[in-house]
Image (cartoon, rainbow, N blue to C red):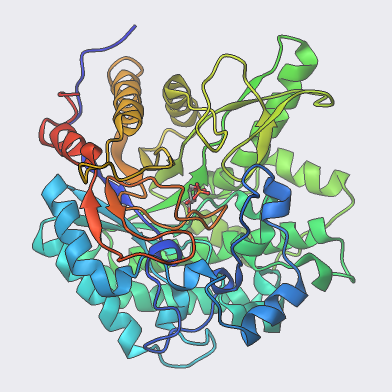
Length: 487
Ligand code: BG6
């Protein structure tokens, strides 16, 4: 049931990165510290997500007193000093769009500062101008897992309502200074992730919540992000009525492990736990099932007087998402083999291949997800992350041969074409995750490489930092040049 390959004119092909995984330069030109600067490299933990995301107040304190190579996000791939070279390579591939994020702590060294950091603004203006030079449309995420440490220490991260006003102040500065170069914006990366990894999503450290159930704190923090996102959307539209401001979700996709009705029901519940916050951003109000869930657990979420109105006024223009893989879910997972995935462990699907990191690749799941999302939201969709993390090596001939990445790309492009041409999905674009090798979010390794461009650095930061085109570089160039019709 495959369609002839066809993509709309103006389809936005490109690649994606995030500030904390590529910029480096963590303490220069007035940048403040973020949670990502405090995450140590933990070798060998690749398949245990719970352990991977474990973090305590002690870890936070330690991170502020030591400066070792063990904090890889501090060095990234030094995009901060290589951005011209890197964007030139994106342009050579023919990118129409480049998804990047802005680091809040570069714009305000301390979020409570009255005036923004000029050096931070200057850096992003330069990056954006560089994109425009090549007619690359920037797609900018305002918050990609890099909560400022100052907010964690003072307000327990996004649990504190104070974060709302501070974030809106930051967003307005971004709109004012970067708006002339940016048409497409996203507020929070993977906005549903708070309940899976509260530390990087919300700056919530469990041992700091003895006075309130931690889960309740997470719901409250999410509420604050919802309000902050809605206010940012409204502010952005007021300044630039043509701006397109979207939400961004983790499109996890679970199939019922068996056809037992209880497995099906458990899977539906699991999916709702992912949709609930995007439901708010798209429909402008809490879905009933989320309200029920919170009250059934005996928790309350504190709303301020205008919050309901704010949510209504901050509806997003489009829905963007990350998609890497699928897995299964069951009512009773005891005794079932689990497989690690994008920020969670699911039940292993016996019918799917796995990547070297155990993620189960599934191009059909992308078409399935596109249909599901379009049916639910009826908004234009944007795939802002998709890709394959693999252990690439430089061959004796000096090249990086990555046929597995080309194959992954090809299958997923076919799935998109089917969703557009057979299922009628309105898809705006596609940005490959980690178009240039960067640090992994979950494992903080360099060895988990997604790029079409190889970066000569290892897990400990050793190497020349040299950029080398992989075989997939020319392949993606051809995909883009043919608007997805030559695979
Ligand atoms: C998404 C994140 O969850 O997955 C990215 O938005 C991340 O930041 C990507 O890098 C891939 O995950 P990982 O752990 O392989 O880097």
